[in-house]
Each structure stands twice: as C-alpha cells, then as structure tokens.
Length: 278
Length: 285
Image 1 (cartoon, rainbow over the protein chains, first blue to last red):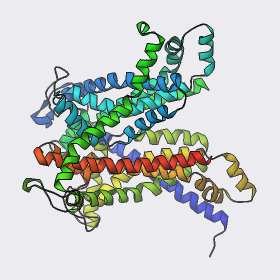
Image 2 (image 1 turned 90 degrees about the horizontal axis):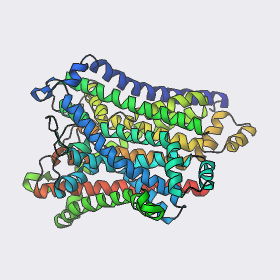
Image 3 (image 1 turned 180 degrees about the vertical axis):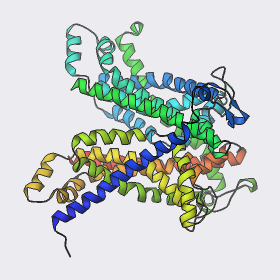
C-alpha cells in the first residue's frame, strides 16, 4: 500500500529527527558522564601536585607541564610552516600544477592515521636522529600531524581578506611582502589563530603518535630532551592498566574541558572574523 | 625578513610551501623502508594471508588483523553512515538555518573529544552493557564498531552538510514547483545531487575508522583470532602495531612496520577514492 506523500514526509522527518537527537544525545552524554565522574576529583591540588605511586594517588602536575611543553613545540614548528605555505598558495602563485601538488600533499597528510605518525616519529626522530623519547621528538611528530589543519585554516583566512585591501597597499607603493606583512596578515590574524588553536586541541588529545615519540615518563621534565607524559597518555595508562579509575576520570575531565574550551574559543574567533569580513 | 628582499622572501615561502608534501613523502619513505624489505623477505602472501601471529616463534601472519579491521570498520559504517547522513539531511533541509548554525558547530566541537575518552566510555559503559545483555566478553567487534561509528559521526555530518548545502536552490525550487513535497524533493533531487559529496564524507569517515587506534585497543579486546560472531574479541591492524611496538625488536619490529605499510596503502586507496568522488562533483557543476 502506498502512503500519501504527506505521511511519508512526516515519517521521514520523524526518523531523521530522531537520528539527529540520538547523535546529539550520545555526544552530550559522553561529556556529561566524564564531567560528572571526574569533576569531584579535580581541583587546584590535583592539577598542581605530583603523582604518587604511578599515578594511583596525588595529582598530575608533571603531566600538565609535559602537555604544555609538547604542544608549544608542535605549535612553534607547525605555525610558521603552515602559515608560510598558506601565504605562498594565496599571495604568491596562481592555481597551477604546483599548487595542486601542495594541496594534495596537505590533504593526504591530514588523512594519515596517528599511529603511522607515531611509527614514523619513532623511527625518524627517536631512532635515526637520536633524539630519544623526548618532548622534542614528540613535538616534531605532532607538528607534522597538525600542519594540514593550520595550512587549511590559514588559507581560508587569508583568502577572505578583501582584495581592495591589497590594492590600496600596492597603490601606495608597497611591495608584495610589505603588503602581506602589514595588511594581509593582520586582517587574517583571527582566522590564523583559529587554525593554530585547533592544532593545539588536536595535540592535547593525541595519544598514539605521542606515546611512541615522547615516551611516558612521569618525572617532571627539565629540558626538551626529557621524556614526558601528556594528559592523554596519562589517562590512557591509568585507565588501561587499571591503576586508578578515580584519577583517570579526573584526568579525562580536565582533558575534555581544556579541549572544549580551546575549540570553543577557536570557533568563536572564526565566527567573529567571518562576520567582520562580510 | 627585509634582508632577504622580495625575491628572497618568495624563494623562502616556496620552500616552506613544500613542507607538507615533503613530510608526507618522508613518512611514506621511512615506513616503507622499514616495512617493505620484511614483507618481501617473509613473503607477501604468507604475511598477508596466514593466520599465524607468533612473534616469539618468528611467525608473522596478519590475516586475522586484516579481517578484524574490515569487520570493525564495516560495523562502524553501519552505525555511523545512516545516522550521520540522516542527521546531515535533517539539519540542512528540515531545520531553520539558525538552529543548524548552532548544532553544526556543536557537533564539530565534539570531534575534538580525544579518542582515548571515547575508548574509555566504551570500556565503562558499552562493554558491560553488551556483556550483560548479549553475552560474550563485552570487549568485542560490536563494541569497537559502535564506538568508532560514533567517533566518525562529526566527520560524516560536517562534510555531508557542506555538500548538501552546495546544491543550488534552483534544483529544489524546480522540484517543489512540480508539486513534489519537501521530502520528495529531498530524496529525489537534493540528496542525489549531493551524492558524490556524501559518498566522499562516508569514505573519509571510513578512513578515520580504519586508522583509529587507541579507542579500538580499549574496546575491541585484542585477541588475535578471526572473529566468528560480532561478540568475539578481535585485534585490528592499528591495535597490533600499538600494542607490540613498545617492546618489539628486530624482525618483530619490522613486521609491525610492515603492518604499517599495509595500513598506509589502505588509507591511500580510501583517500584517493574520496578525492575522486569530490572531483567528480566539481567537474559536473
């Protein structure tokens, strides 16, 4: 029997509406579950005290420091490369075979699984370049991983700077690089910062690529050549080896809050930036 | 960078622009250099199709891991693809723009939740549920598929929405003018017009699912055997690498890099399929 079109539409809307609700419900559930179990553990003391007994008791201070250092290294390397690539693609070339090759490279790099980055970092940075399990090895590996994100977002940001800005600058006798430096980059800055922050979020959440390059030492790192454990790795080890479910939830809560805040700020910046340019 | 001069700046930027593609080549080169000689010396057929994985005994067959990866990924697609596409269609066609403007970023925001957290949820919530309701060890193909299916939702939804939105409004108007209902327009005109983008979204989601490591290690159980039912514990290709990399040496380590080569090849194939699908769309319009 054929249903009248009006009813099929209602049925379809109902099914799709439920699918949407289910998706949102699952994702919200995950966050609330982690926060509910984790927040009671979290406090300044948890953040700022040293772990005891492999993380069974005490806080996660060295882990927080390790995460920050590793992320800073990754960002410090990936940002100039990513933004430079974006400037070259948008300001210095026309669409050609070369730009297609560059974009293809970035796209492919974005699709590579993190465990492959981990394998590569382990053989290249840790073993061949003899950096050992260190913040530097981990940071370099992460830099490779977040490079595509930064390229993509910066490119979008630079493209959305109106051409009239550039024309005015050129008409005043500025060279291309002066124009890029003094006109294009400042206007595109919020968009570029968005890309960098998304990269920070990815670095903090990454586990597979970090555990084989930065190691998992719980000691407070004193130099970039020291092994360090990031929050994600710490959480993974606590949870998987059943060391402390309580502290695992606490670490997870901090991890989720940090990443959500970073991503939220990134999207907020992006929205304001887009609104301003339109 | 004044000392460089205009030409110098251009040259430096051109050099930097090749960083991504160089990184890609470097990664491919080193994974292949470490893994391929092993595949050749061990015998590609024995490596890929033998079910015997006993590193201590010098036996390296990854067939169970290949089967496991395929099952878990297909399962994830079964969960993620219909849910994600339905969600994307609903949000673009049946919900006011402003509501979607809130929901889409929310979903993308959730893409930032680390995979270890998804894995942990699987261990704490999903696996006990499966164990008590359906039996088996709980940590299984099913648990892995569901968790991965949820993890790839943001990817599928976000790319599908972009491709459905890019269908020109005149298509919809033409169909509505012929007397079709909103839903008839959606499934007979809009979705078919956005098909290649949606397919690309699904393929990219698939790539994410097959490459995911930490969540799968935590929920799939990691037993090296060919699964007979969805409730069996399995070990995927990615899990195999991550679990044994910490202590592997010599031939064993080479075998893990060889597993990486297999993974890399699968991912490259999936990415080029997605790319082809997107280009087909671009060529049509």
